[in-house]
Image (cartoon, rainbow, N blue to C red):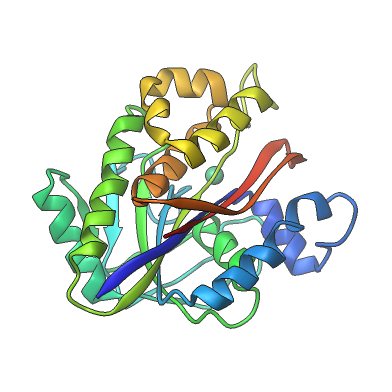
Length: 277
Ligand SMILES: [Fe+2]
């Protein structure tokens, strides 16, 4: 049988990948962010997930503004990374889990989600940075990428993203194979890269969201996407990926690690690791 062992939400700013490449994680600017990860990695080494279901948003490597699916699920045997222009080393391809991917796709479709299915899919920093943070060396896991449109309006609502996560949780629970699944939410926290509010950060809202993601994410569904943009910033609306992540968890939740730090590259960063059972 398959089960979800827990979830990790983490920021995915490209600069984090640059810090990993330059091996400066312990420098004063970076340490307040990276310090959360040794504990998370120790937990993962014990929990031994086989597959990662990652909720993230593509930044133009696989989808561009001309064709932007609201929800897209990968069903490929491998996922290639490529140069996005940030100067980051291109990462090795990540192994897919097509059998579980198709079960997720079938479950989500049965639950009313009209998906884009991707049997070829490139993955950008929003996928590879969290993978690098969680597994700095060998990556003993397969990947199921679930792309959520947080870029091209209209965006899916927080309620819809929470429902998407819940459907993924049902998919894992009804899977016939053996698999230990980690769910990841990638992005945020509050930040805005452009316009009159460039540099916008909202600590109060971020900290409320982090606590709601522990205690019960339903409270976050009261915000419209326009309100989320207002409160978290144009790019901070990536919190939708974390809401989907939390939706996949059910039952008792324990906090493995929680960290919040301002700033990394004009972004409020967060790490939240939750275990089930
Ligand atoms: Fe992003």
